[in-house]
Length: 131
Image 1 (cartoon, rainbow, N blue to C red):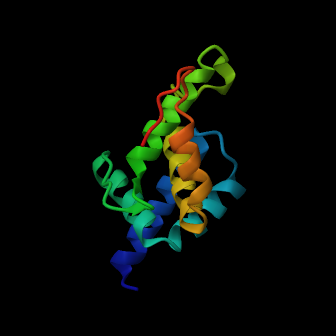
Image 2 (cartoon, rainbow, N blue to C red; image 1 turned 120 degrees about the vertical axis):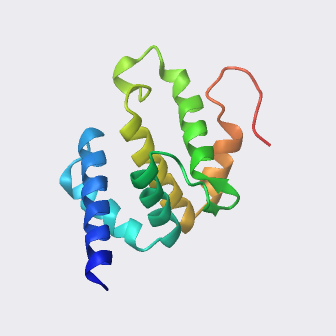
């Protein structure tokens, strides 16, 4: 690994740690998440692109689902909790991002439960599901 690559990885690790801190996740969580990210080239690229541009790359998918698909599902799902302010992530963009990264990593291991949830849980009280 070149010095430039090492510095890039250190910057991304610091970025992930900072996101975790803002998301009210502890250092142990941040370390475990970072070690999982390092094992996933696709997720690492997602984080690097977000770090560099502030936008989503969306060039990596698991079972046809991209990071933005997961984010949309989370936001839609959390609409059901709007009356319970302490459980709401709508003002915690870092938390939504980190949890979406975690879902993407989990989907790499076992996508089926998440596919079912994203298709069946719309976050609304009417029956309009993703297909």
